[in-house]
Length: 99
Image (spheres, rainbow, N blue to C red):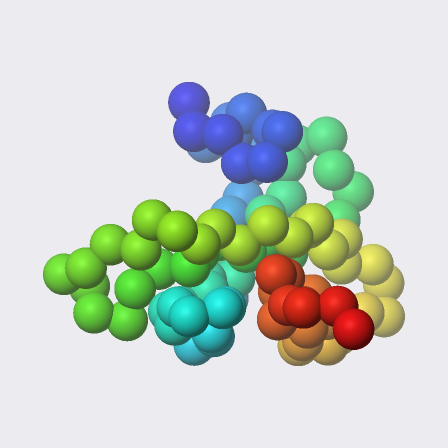
C-alpha cells in the first residue's frame, strides 16, 4: 500500500487528485513542485499536499532539495489557489538567510 504523509492509502476508499505543478527555485536549484489533494477515509475534508523538487529536465535527478511543508486542509469556503499560494510562500522561505 502506498503511503501519503502519515496515512496508509486504501485504494478502494481514498481519493488522490493531481492539481497542478509550479516551477520554483530553492537556493541554487530550480524545478517543479507538484500539488495534489487527497482525502482519506477517516477525513472530513480534502487536504493539499506538495512534493518536489523535481527537475525541469526529466533526465536529471535533484537530490539536494526536498520540499518540506505542512499539508493544508481545505475547509469550507477556502480557495484552493490561495492555499497553494500560501504553501509556495512557505517553500520560498526555506533556507533563506535571516537578517
